[in-house]
Amino acid sequence: MYSRISSATPVARRSAPTARVVQILDFLVEQRGNRCGLSEMARALDLAKPTCLGILTELTAGGYLVRDPETLTYGLGPALVAAGRVAQQSFAISAVARAELEKLTARYRTTCTASAVVGERIAVLEGTGPGMVKVGASYAFAPPVGLMYVLWDTDAAFDAWLATPPTVPVVQDEARLRRVVAECRERGYLIESLTAHGRRLYGLLAGVAARDLPDELRELVGELVTSLGERVYLGTDLRPRKQHPVSLLAAPTFDADGRQNMVLTMYVGASITGAEIERRGGALVEAARTVTENSGGRVPERIIATPR
Image (cartoon, rainbow, N blue to C red; front, side, top):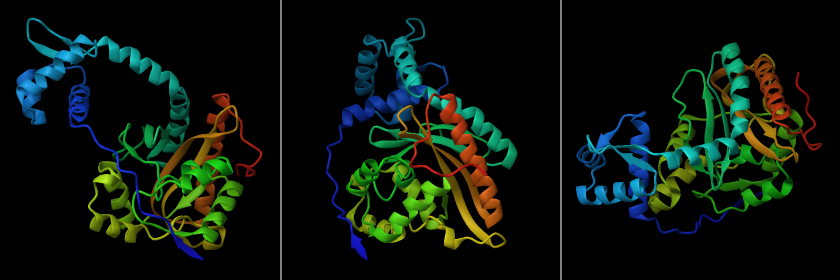
């Protein structure tokens, strides 16, 4: 039976001054070590020079930026180096994953990523191969986005995600969703068929906070989403010799407590046979398990699939 999940989302007030700080830091990161002057930054970011100067002065005082007294230009400072080291330690597993992603990319000549839930967002931590994968890109961790990040976690984690207010109105086919969970845990990987509308949805949700979407647009996006779990292939959907349109395959990695901590993704973006899906899925599961083992994690008993 279908039941509608509430479309209400808590409204959080955004801070315009803080957003401007983020703009400036992002701009300087994009310069790849090159320093920029006040006028250049203010013009590029469409900020008033006094506003821009005030932010630059505070960030410099805190060590997040440095100012060259001769050229009067600004660059990233030592405080960001320290912060980056802490973040790098937190995401050390992503470096372990990169070696496995590179092997998959070389074997299948496709884009592969490692991503995880960071706070309330899904973040891309590593990417290899062709395609425009932006490391650091993030998405809201709420239905309809995020199923694969709780699919192999505990039942409590899955239920908590499902209870999160959705970013757009969605319909839940609970019976199918439970089948998706059971089959993906048994198989060890997820097979997603994503329509062109679905790809546009991911792009939209990546660039715009759900609370900023007009009600009419949120309803329209909800129509594109249809039902949670509907884009996931089940075993009964697949035939070894039949061509199946596949967007991506995904498999989990686990920490020392057996909790899901990351997802490895292999992009397909084409129709492939059921037999080829199985081959690629097996390779992805094997890579994910190698990452788990090399990072000190363990595969929990609830995951019963073995690589083929």
